[in-house]
Image 1 (tube, helix red, strand yellow):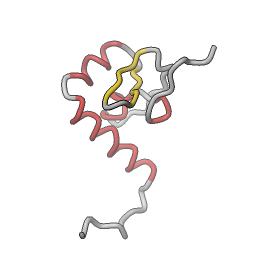
Image 2 (cartoon, rainbow, N blue to C red):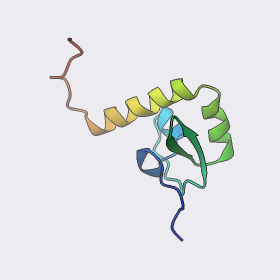
Image 3 (cartoon, helix red, strand yellow):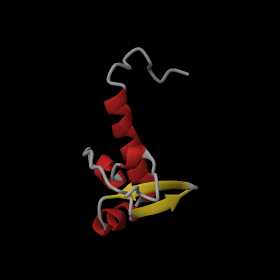
Image 4 (cartoon, rainbow, N blue to C red):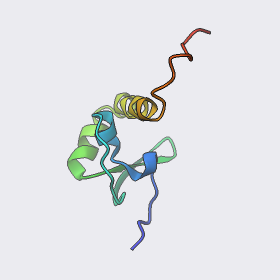
Length: 79
């Protein structure tokens, strides 16, 4: 059966990503933040995430950036 919901990060557990782990989920446990759906591997992960959604989301995103773009030394943060 297909999951009814498709979340950000390719349905990975968002809390897992925040902790540097890639955990695939079926997105049956999810939360909507700012109009986007984020998936969680279990209720505990969701509860933990919801204690600091903005902070954890930032961590999850930076993990994704690290994984996807390990070769970004040329792109420094100079304005």
